[in-house]
Every structure is written in C-alpha cells, then in structure tokens.
Image (cartoon, rainbow, N blue to C red; front, side):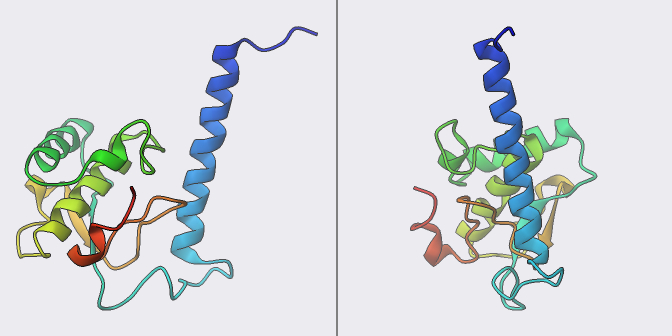
Length: 142
C-alpha cells in the first residue's frame, strides 16, 4: 500500500483543521442544544463582520484598507490564532471587527463600502476570539 505524499498529508490536515474551525463557529453560534448560547451573544455587544454576499474583490479591497488603517491583522498571519480558515471572508470579518472595535464602534466604522454588517452574535471560534470592546482587544489573540 503506497503512502500519501507529504503534500497530500498536509492538504488533508488543512482540510480537517478548516472543518474543525467551521464546526467550532457553528457550535459557538447555535450552542450544543441548538439554541443560541448565552456566551455567544449579548444584546449589549456587537461585532462587525463581512457580508456573505460581498464579492471576493470587494472584500480584499476592504481588508487591505482595514489592515492599513488601524486594524490589528497580526492574528491573521500564518502563525496567528485566526489564520484558519484561510478565507477572504474569515480574514475580512476579523479585520473589520478589529477596526470597528478600535474606533470604539463609532457610527460608520463598520461599513467598508457596503461589504460589512453589524452582528449581535459573537463570531469567535476555537482559539480565535473576536473582541467586543476596545478595552479587551489589547488582551486577545497574542
């Protein structure tokens, strides 16, 4: 029986890690019993996330802007806690929220040319924590 090449093994590992990350997001959003968990949403907390209908090109442009205009994008680097899943949607959501929180959730700080929206459900997953206020931001994802 032939063994898998290192490349195929790494591809398989990445797929499993990505799937676990997505599952973690689902569990954080709906909770174990199917109802929104109290730890994943709060009427007083908001997050800025990428719109699901935004184009890849528009998200990339907005992501570049957010990272250059004050968002902390270091958790999105290949060694960061929010690198996986390595998708434009996930990376843009983290960067948009970072910018939004650092601007103290000011009106207009979650727009990014229409590619983002305000969420009241915590988008955090696994070890990737999306801060919900600027004060906690400095302590997360390092």
